[in-house]
Length: 375
Image (tube, rainbow, N blue to C red):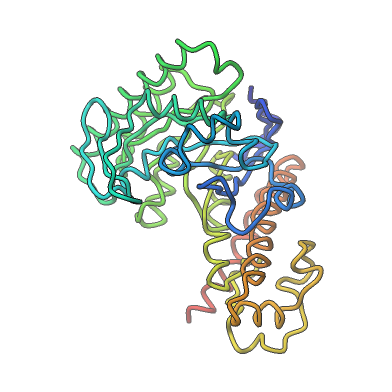
C-alpha cells in the first residue's frame, strides 16, 4: 500500500508498505544485481540508511540458480539482508547481455552470457523466479527497446510488453503464495509521447501496485529521458508509486523527483567508485588525481559517512593507486551515502514546502562544477 504524504509543485513524498518494511519516498535503491551491493556488506547498508535494495532475476536465475536460493527460503536469508528487496524481471539483461536471443510471443530464448547455455525467460517464468526469490516488489517481464528505434518498432514492442504484462497479471492472480508482495507494471514506448501515454493508460487498466518508466537511460540524450518521464507520469495513478528504472546522476534524480517520480536505482555509485571517482554536492572528484596526494581533508566537507569521518583524501587516493580493495570500498560507501542522503534531503524539502528552492540550488551547484571541470 502506498500513501501519498505531501506534494510540492509536482514532487511527491510518500510511504510504501512491503512485507519487509516501509519505504519512505523519494528513495534511491542500491543495486545488488548478484545478491550483493558491490563491496558493501548488509550491515553497512543498514548503517547507510538504505531502505530497499535491488536484485536481478536474470543474473540470479543463471547463478547461483533457483534451487540454491530456494534452499535458503529466498533472497533475504541467502544474502543476509532483512529489508525490502525489489527484483527486476530480467528483461533488460536478456536484451543487453545475452549472446544470442530470439524474441517470440512466448518469451525470449537466449544463450547465457556466462557459458552460452540455452535458456528461456517469459512472463510466467519471470514471475515464478521472482516468487522463488521472495522479493517484496516484483517487476513484470517487458521488452526494452533500443535507442534509437523507429516508431513501428517502438509500437510493436510496447504492445508485446502489454500482452506479456497481462500474462504476468494472470499468473499473479492465480497464485495463493504471493499475498502481500507487490507487482509493478513497466511503461514503454521509446521516445514517442503518444505511445508512452497509450502504454501507461493500458497498464493502469490491467492494474498494478506501482508503475515503472522503462526504456530510459539506454543511450538516449538527457532531454529525451526527461520527455519520456513527462509523457508517462501524468497518466499514472497518483495513489501508486512511480519508479524510473536504471538511472541516474544526482541532478537527473532531482529533476525527475520534480516530475513526480518516487523511486530510482542506478549502478553509478559503486561503478565509478571502482575507478576512484566520488560524488559530492559540487560534482564528482577523481581521487586518483595528483592534487589529492597530500590532501588531509575528507572526500566531502561536512559529510558524515564512515569514509569521510575517518579517512583523508590522501589515504583513499593511496589505497586506490595501490589497488587495495579498501579504497573502492570507502568510495563506494561514500557514494551510496551521498545518493541516499540526497533523497532524504529531497523528501524533507517536499515535506516542508521548500523543494523548488532546493532543486534550483542543488542542480545549479552541481552542474556549475561539472561545466568548469569540462572547460
